[in-house]
Every structure is written in structure tokens, then in C-alpha cells.
Image 1 (cartoon, rainbow, N blue to C red):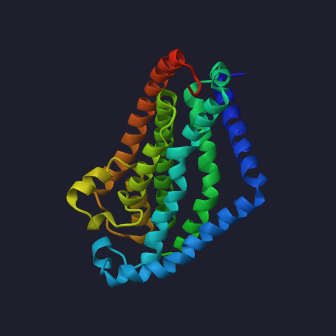
Image 2: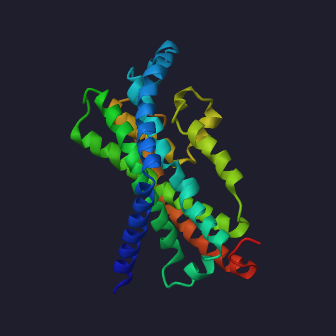
Length: 272
């Protein structure tokens, strides 16, 4: 079997395992879906606050319900970067099976990527309801091409978050416990990407800081194509930054994982 087919088979097996884990605990799964719908309903209460603050002239749209939903929907994918691959690896370290897993002929990088991809597919179940509600409130003023470009922006953002997830997995190998770092970054993902607060309203230094988060461009481009809202940065710059971050972080995560794996093996692939 070719290495490509092995990689595809690995991705399928990990994804199927993730789905089985989710639906096994039915109450948790159902309430997860209900929470997604509840967030959509909550936006009906938050939207008037945007109107009162005269944000429409700043962000380029009066459709604050869709504006907020398209941002908050990205929250579903934060776990792809922060907790999926790194959390799984932390669990393997705690039960002492990392040595066995890493002894397999499968690429460590693709193993971590497969875990993150599986989580991204699972989290799409919670992303889609918000995205659909946001579309319904646009009265379909966008074209099919704009919808496709919006989804491409979402997909690219997720692929970049997956690379960040692999980098964080490398941190787990080295430092074992890094949950406090994830907690800090989780707040940054929410406040410095335009998810909740429009970046157009933030000071210039924070706008510059937001360029280090792939969600910034994914959220902004998704809103722009569906709502025709104003962009925070030039159009082509945002697309190029998404692609550039994907390439740079993919290379960095691959190199970091290989290097730290060699270092970690000397210390032992388990919790001390």
C-alpha cells in the first residue's frame, strides 16, 4: 500500500473514531447541538447593542445578527488549534502509550494532523447551524461565487489552525502541561480576531497583533463576501496572509515536531 493511501486510511480511521466517541454520549452530543442553536438565539439580544453603538458605519453593514454569528461560529474551530491534537497527545502521555504510538511507521506529523482534521470535521457539526442562521438573516444578498469564497476562507482558516495544533502538540511533548498557555490564547482568539469585537474599533497596535491569528482573515473575508462589509485590511493582503500562514506554520510545525520528538525521547515519552 502506498504512503498516500496509508495516510488517507489513517485519516479515515481517526475521523471515524472521533465520530463514534461523540455520538456514544448522546446527552452530551444533543446538548452540544442545542448550545449552537442557543448561541444563535442569544445574538438576537446582542445585536441591538451594536446598533446603539453606531457600529454599522464603521464595519460597513447594518446586519449585526449575521455579522456576530459569522464571527462566533468560528469559535467552534478553536479547539482544533488548542485542544484536539495536543489534548490527545497529553492523554497518551498520561497513560504511557506514546512510546508505542510513536514506534509505528506512520509520520508523527500526519498523525497529529489526522487527529486535528477529525476534530475539525466533528466541530463542523456545531459550526454549520450558526453559519446557516447567519445566511438566513442576509436575505441571500450574496452570489453563489461569494458563498463559495466565504467557505474557502473558512476552510483555509481551519487548515492553518490545524498547523497551530501540531505546534502545540510539540509543546506538550517538551513541557507536558501547557493548559495555561492554551487558556491565554483562547482569550486572544476571541478578542483579537474580530470574533466578538469588530477590529475596525480597536487601536492600531491591536489590529497589527490580530494579523498573527488566521481566524482574523477567515472571519473578515467570510463576512465581506456574505454581508459586503468593510474589510479590516486590503482584500488581496488577507488572502495572501491566509496562504502564507498556512505554508509557514506547516513548515514550522513539521520541523518543530521532528526536533522536539528527538529531545523528548531522551527525557521519556511519559509524565515524569
